[in-house]
Image (cartoon, rainbow, N blue to C red; front, side, top):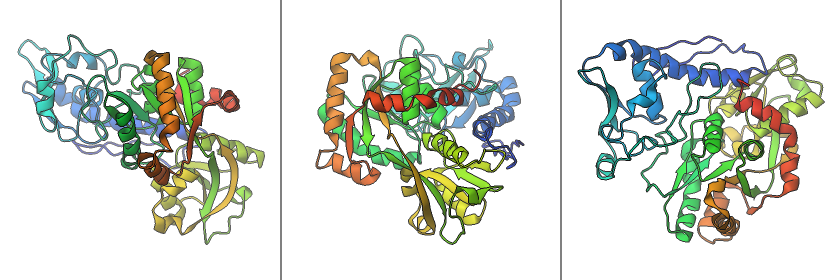
Amino acid sequence: MQIACHGRDRPFVRHDASTPGPGRSLARMALRWASGVCLAAVFGASAQTADAPQVVEVVAGDTFSGIAARLMGSLKGWSKLYDPQLSHLPDPNLILPGQRIELVTEAGGRRYLRLIGGPATRLAAARPAPAAAPAHMPGQVPARVPAAPPVSATPAAVAEPAAPEALVVGVVPNIGAAALVAQYESLKTYLEKKNPQKVRIVVPANFKAFYDSAVRGDYDLAVSPPHMARLAQVDARLVPLVMYEPRINAQFIAPTDSGITGPRDIKGQSLAFANPQSLVALYGQQWMRQQGLEPGKDYEIKAARTDMGVGRMLLSGDVVAAIMSNGEFRSLPADEASRLKIVEIFARIPNFIILAQPRLGAARLASLKSQLMAFMADKDEGAAFSKATGFNAIVESDEATLKELDPYVAPTRRLMNPGN
């Protein structure tokens, strides 16, 4: 695996496509981390010797801890850069694209980050500062990839101002963040009609960031892949409330004009996954093993940078086939999808599960469960959500489905906590 840094403002990451099969998902995670480290290295030397403030403009995906790390050249001690009175940020989890944040170095050597302009500045200034740093600031719990800095639950791409009592709903980024935010606007509107508080939808940067934030308690509700939901229930005592229906199709995809008729046709070639950490990917690799094909030995796994990237890899010839969910396939541009074929639907797996934090209390959990189960019947918001997602019902999560996921708890735990 090769990594290269470029430019003062944004890094690029170049990797060697020969990274072997089973390790590729971890390689992908490491590469994502590497981009942040490269940027930290670029900023590091100047940040540590600067006498004047340095200014960063927040871009989509930035977090308070990430900005601190790249300005200081290291994640170590990043939390000292937040000051409840001087940072002008009542909640460092809420930063927005376009805001400008400066690194202030006082004469005595003290340093802190301070919001100096951009969207929501007046809102931030109007809200009272907390007496101390929040209990769950971004990046507090290290991600367990080697030396990797953590990822905040609230990237600037989707953060929005909200009252402290807002109901926070985290959504796993199985497709693009913009598409998810648009889809979940209807659920947000529905829940705000049913409850006195505002609702904030949060789409984190990746699956690892989603899982870490969910178990850390950053979300009140978490729309989770089923295997991560079961792990969060077992390891962190989160409460499965409801699940979507119908079940998800796990699909073997190939270009329409290809000669691919089954999994054995890809032996010695490359197979793409939208996300190697998804349950569809785990089912897919198990299915390939049942055909006598081992990843890294009989075929190479390639992971797309985005869900739409899978279609482009197929049509460019970078891979000969792909394993995708029906939701991932639906998200492809129409012109690309029309040039691809579903060779086989090899499994129907449990759909997304909505988890809740037990801190909400039994009465609130019961109320939210009832509201969610009635959502799809709503002629306005529920109908819009169903049309956008393909989901047709929300039902109570059942123990039989949860136990069905038990074989995937251990591999999911390794993916989410690779240091263990």
